Every structure is written in C-alpha cells, then in structure tokens.
Amino acid sequence: MFFKPAELQSREVKPFEGFPFGLSEGSLAGVISTDELAETAFLYHLVANALEEGPVYHIGPGASFSVKVLKRLAEDVSNLYAGNVYSVEELLQALNVVEDGSLVVVSLFPALLNRSAEGVVEVRKLVDRKGLILVLGHTTIELNELDLPGEFRRLYDLPEIFEALAVLRTSSYRGHYRLNMTVLKAPPDYVSAVGDHSIPIDSLIKPLL
Image (cartoon, rainbow, N blue to C red):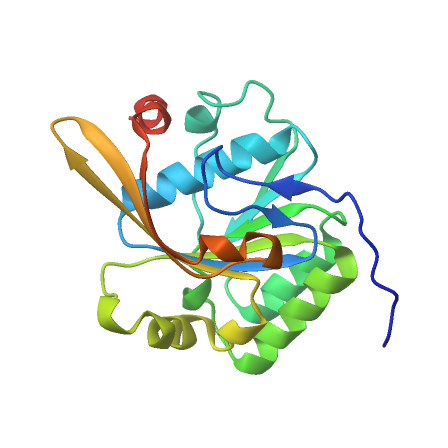
C-alpha cells in the first residue's frame, strides 16, 4: 500500500549520549553482544532512557530483568513491563498487545522456537503497523568476527529488513571500560555511523557493578 511520506517528530531512543545512532518509531534493530557486560550496559541504559517517554517492554525466553539494577539508573520504573515468550508465534502475540509507539526489547531472539524468514517478515509488519521501536538482542561468545554479515543472517534470518545491525563488545584496562562497536547497518539519518567505534563508558558501567 502507498502513503505520502512526511517529516514527523517521532519518539527516538538511545542508550546514552554518544551512542552512534538512535532508533525511532517504526524501527527494527538487531544487536549482538559478545559479553554480558556489553549486553547489560546497552539494555539497562536503553530501557532507563526510554522509560521517561512511554511504555517499555522486555521479553524473551526466560528473560530475567533486574528492577533493582534498573532503579540505579531510573527512579520511576512504572512504565516497565516484562514477560516471557518462547516462540516466534508467542512473540507475535505479545507484539499485538503492546502499546503503539513503545520500545520493545527482546532478549535471546535467536533462541526462540520456529524462527524463520517468514516469521521475521511478520514481526516487521507489526513494527510498521504499530510504530514500534523493536530491538532483537542476543548474547553469545560463539561469533565469527571474520564474517559478521553471515552471522547476522544465521541469527536473524533476514537482516536486510532491519534498520540497524550492530555488534557490541566491552574491554577494560586498569579499571577503565570501553564499548567497542561494529555497526553494519544504521538508520538513514545515521548512515555515517556505519563502521567501528570505541566509546569510553566508565560512568555508565559504574552504577551497574
């Protein structure tokens, strides 16, 4: 179906200032973390920043989320909702009931049952129809760094229909932390973000430890 594109002021979220790109309503992102600290820093800061502007949903297969840790970053967590899904069909059911324009973070997306290119297309349809900001995350130490495009295809089936694709890693030296990122794909407004980044994150890590 056709529509007339317009420049709209939509909700946009970032985990922190200095992050290479933001995600606006109607965006689908795939984010792979190679260590738990990278996942924790990205997830909790993204959720904390988004809570001020509307509902945030965290779901996944047995996905655990610590409200105690989140409260170190955000005083009011009343906009946070959490749930478990174990298959792509259950994920689609969950996306159908979340509020339009919400941030939804799915942990361990590649672990969902019945994952397929067709299922990802159905997820994409809901993102577009409801104006969601959907982040499909995964944490793994088994990542072929020499073939990141192939890894995204293996884990996300149809990476071409995502607005953003990124790999997150943390490194530390003498008590100082950096977030090392590879951005394979970024939203059109942030196309210059494609490439490698290394960002100091001492102030972001401290409240999480």
